[in-house]
Image (spheres, rainbow, N blue to C red):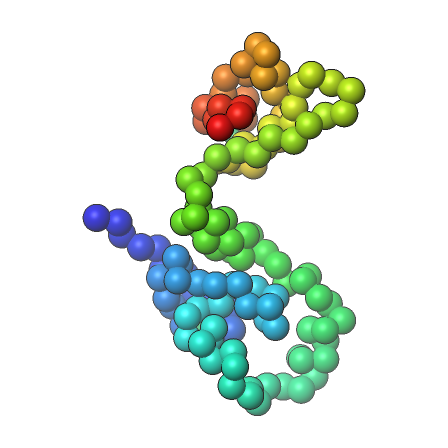
Length: 128
Ligand SMILES: [Zn+2]
Ligand SMILES: [Zn+2]
């Protein structure tokens, strides 16, 4: 049994299960299924001024909740795990913690550190 987290849609202010939120390109944010399915219909913006400003500001409205929802969407496809990226000229890699996003150097040869120094979450295997 998985209890779903309910999140508030920033577009219509309704609550919906967080895992049903999807990225809406026109809104530059995660929206509830309702808003997402309305995307193809012509919309009458409540305030034309707001619409103009939105284009200038671009993804400035991106916030932690959106990030959380996006990560949740990704987690559905793939189990949450940290990301590795090469450090040129070094045998070490940069590891970004899957739990807290803290980034630190990881030595794949020594398998060190074995867990995130910030939150203690175990480092996922280097090459899956
Ligand atoms: Zn909505
Ligand atoms: Zn961490």
